[in-house]
Length: 113
Image 1 (cartoon, rainbow, N blue to C red):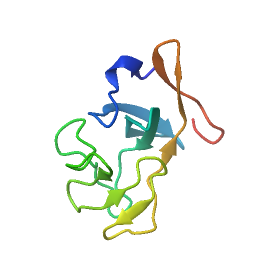
Image 2 (cartoon, rainbow, N blue to C red):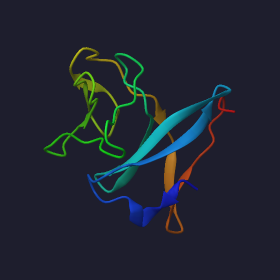
Image 3 (cartoon, one colour):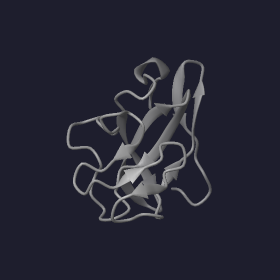
Image 4 (cartoon, rainbow, N blue to C red):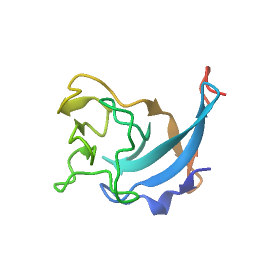
């Protein structure tokens, strides 16, 4: 379990967590966008720095896109693709999450340990 589903407000603050990916523990986050939880590794596709300066602040001021506070790279929350900025066309690393029994749960995919 990552967090209670009620912790994610549509286009609101995200919840940070840690995940093991390819044998390495990495920072990750989940937000709610278009009614669904969306989770990604918390690393900009341009330079691998965490997106949020303030914990949980992943959306731009219009709450339309995810944004890297360091470089301004702007990502589509539904797909993780960079739509504006220095890494246009690149993508955040997605994580598979579901909302189940009032909780946000990370699903383990093959290749993740």
